[in-house]
Image (cartoon, rainbow over all chains, first blue to last red):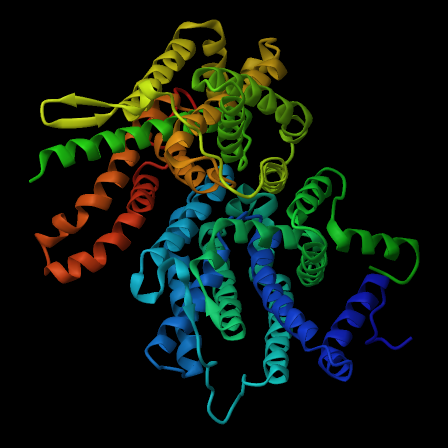
Length: 322
Length: 307
C-alpha cells in the first residue's frame, strides 16, 4: 500500500468524504439537483464554523455557548457595508476578521478569567448582548434583518457569483481551515492548549501563561467563525439577528458532538449529518425538534465519542495503525 | 418630569426584578449546590404557565390554576432530576449543556404537540383586573399582586434558607458540598428537593406573567439568559445575591429603556442620544455583568466560605 494513502478505516472514510465533496457539484449538476448543491454549500459553511468552535471546545476544553455571535458578526460585516454600496470583498473580509477578533479579544479577556459554569454562562450572555445590539439597530432592519443584494466582489481574483464558484471557494476555505487546525494542534501552541485542558495547574507550573494561550486560541477561533459568517451572508443574501441567538450556538455544539469532540474531521462529518437530518426530518414532521432533542440526550448518555468514536471502533477491529 | 410615569416605570422595574429573582434563585441554588448548569430552567417557566392556563380553562379559577400548576411543575422538576440530571452530576459541564439544551428542544416541541403553536391566553378574575387609585396614580391591581407575590416568595425563601434545617443543609451545600456528604446527609434527597423547588419557583414566575403576556412556546428562552446574568452578578449559590442582583438588573433594564435617551441628551446632541440609547440600553445589563466580573469575579454576594 502506498504511504500517502490513509492507513485506517476512519481515515479512508474521511478521504472518501472529502473526495465526494470535491466532485459533488458536477454530480449534482449532472443530476439536475441545484437544491442539493445549495444544501451542501450551507453545510460546508456551517462546517467551517463548527471546526472553529471545536478548536476551543474540543481541543481547549472551553465550552462556549455563544459562538453563533461570530457567525452573525461576520454576516453583518458583509451586510452593513453592502447597505452603503461597498461591495469590496477584501473590505468585508478585513472587517469580519477585525470586528470578530476584536469582539473576541474583549469578551474573551473577561470571560477567560473564569472557568466552568461561569465561562459557559458568560459567553452565552455576551452573545445575547450582540444579539440585542443588532436587534436594536433600526437602521439595519432590526428584527427583520437585512437583504444583501450582491455578493462580495474580489476584482480579478475570485468570483462568488455562480453557485459553482461559491461552492468551490467555500470548499477551499474549509480545506484551509482543516489544514490550519491540524498544524496548529500539533504545533507547540496546540500542545499547550490541549495540555491546559487536562491539567492547567501543571501547565502553569511548567511556566506557561495559560491565560494568554487560551485567549489567543479563543480569538483565532472567533476569527475563523467570522469568516464562516461572512460566507453565510454571501450565500444566503439575507441576514438577521436570529443567526446569533443562543439556540444557534447550541446547535453548533450539537454538531460538534455528533461528529466527535476534539477530532479533526469530527466537526465536518457532524455538520453534514446534522444538516442532512434537519432537511429530512423537517420534511417529514413539524415536530422534528423532538427527535433532535431525544437524539441529543441519548448521544450524551449513551453514545460517547460521536461518529468519529464509532468509526474508530472499525480501526481497532481491522485496518492499519491508528 | 412626569412623576406618575416614573412611578409606573419603577414598579415595572420592581416587577421584572422579582420575576427574575423567582427564576434566578432556583438556578443559583442548582448551580451552587449541584454544580449543574441547567439551560432548560426556562422551560419550567413556560410549562408552569401552560399548566396553570389549562387548569384555569377547565375550572375557571385562576387560584386553583396556580395551585395545580405549582404541584405539576414540582413533579416535572423532580422527574427531570430523578431521570436525567442525577446521572450527570459527575460528568463535565459540556454534558450538562448538551442534555439540557436537548431538553429545551423536547419541552418546546411537547408543548407544541399538546397545546398547539398559538399562545394561550389566561383570563384573570374580575377582582384582579381592576385598578387601584392613589391620588393621581392609577396602578393595575394585578401588577401589584405580582409584586406582592414576588416579595412574599422572597420572604418565604429567606425563612426557609435561614431558619430551617433544610435551609441549613442548602447553605452548607452551596458552601461545601463534599463536607455535607461526609457528615452523612442524604445528599440525593437534598438535590431532588432543591431541583424541584427551583422548578416550582420558575413555574410560578411563568404563571404570574402569563396573564399579561400569554403563555407561548419558548417564552422562557430569552428571560433565562438575564436570569443567568443575575446569578453571575449575585454570586453563584447565593440566594441573597440573586435577590439584590435581580432587583438591580430589573430596575436598570426597565429604567434605561425609558430614560436613557434623556440622560444621554445631557451629554451629547439629542439626535445622537436617540440613536445610541436603544443600543446601549439593550447592552447595559451585560456591561454591568462584565464590570462585576472584572472587579469581583466571585459576584457581589458570594455564599459564605465558598471558593
